[in-house]
Image (cartoon, rainbow over the protein chains, first blue to last red):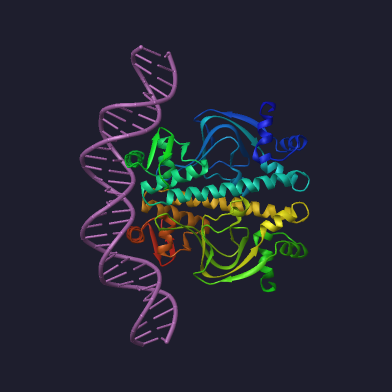
Length: 222
Length: 222
DNA sequence: ACATTTCTGTTGTTTTTACAACAAAAAGGA
DNA sequence: TCCTTTTTGTTGTAAAAACAACAGAAATGT
């Protein structure tokens, strides 16, 4: 735990807390650190969820399996992101998503339920914690709406251009690196990988974009 | 304001507050009530947002215009739902969505920004308010993920079946009424209306579903 | 350095969807 | 009530996407 103390202290979820407050919170939450290897399933759809997971390093995909076995990537998470916060907070104790580790990860696990009951009025730092989580959730919300915008475009071309221009905006540059590989990007945008590759090539030929692997350049204002 | 007092008091956003607390909050938020007519634009994409809107009655669609002019319905809101909460809370002051009134609506407008600055430590009820909003946001989050699930299905048929079975689950019954008309449902699921109508007919013929207008019956476990 | 595996791009074919145009049904108003 | 407007359903055609199969490139392990 000590090894990750600074990282935990600087995470948005514990933002603005003094050491003694953080210590109290970690104790209160029965915090433990757990390591996962790439490929591990952290949460499986149907699991009963009572804990919040804070990613300290590594990479985790939030996915759904469609009824027909196709994978849907909801989002890709990294350091400082959390898993299951909205589920736990909204009392949806049964998970409707899978959390799959895609790069070896270290995760801080917080027993939110236990603390929430115990702290209701007692834990004086709970207020700051809620405020932090409130901000985090509101950001997640905005991101989910952005994702909906991306996948709501009608053609593969429009999905790609919308996604890429959103990424460009987030990076405040027309040169940027994307977080997905091709198959993952296709699963994120809900399109066929090969058709997507084909469309990317066309966009490159037309001079609208340029790319090599995960490095992209947007040539024009899209 | 008096006319809507009970409604406001019972809304999730002010849940659990005593009258005197509510009064203090409403004053603090410089709360005002505004009426909109069907067709009115409450928020336009690009507007600077500093206020939260609580719908007291009526109906409001959250929409986006795609770059190419197609309408995307993000969600449909009713009594007790809020508009712009996540935007304001995440400091995304420039709106990326349109809020369009679809049935004459009454809205309580809260100047969150002004209060937030003022109340930081002063307003003792702010804590309860944040806790309420935290819960609301977490629910919205889960709903957005559900919407992503709906529109991430690969075929029109799968989108319809996923949407309908989700609605069925929410209503805890295989007989239920949907909130969208056909064009709106198509814009929500990002598919062509006529193709959707055709697929609905097919599903009815095959005996998987039955419907008349907005009343649906799911015949089998889908 | 080599072999193996994974990832990405390309092409042709089949399936699905969008689109347009119109018919039928329902809703709303005078 | 009848007329008008809106909503929903139907059909054929053109366009787009999924799918499958494979080739080339890049990454990985030994």
